[in-house]
Image (tube, rainbow, N blue to C red; front, side, top):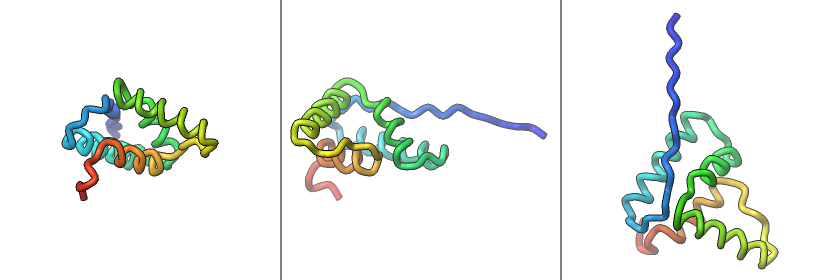
Length: 94
């Protein structure tokens, strides 16, 4: 019996405001989440580690604003994705 394993690394997202970059990144993240069978909370942890440069600064500011407004912490990929779509997708994008 031959066992084949492969390490699949999640891509980083730097907050580049090109629409194609964001969409490609989300699709890659979704494939990895499905492949590794991550639940929503574990997927969030993966994504949190993969935010770099501007995207990381944006997320840190979002966390501080939510804390200041006494809102709950974002702990799932589905909730973070909603916030990211508001920031990184054009309002007209469907």
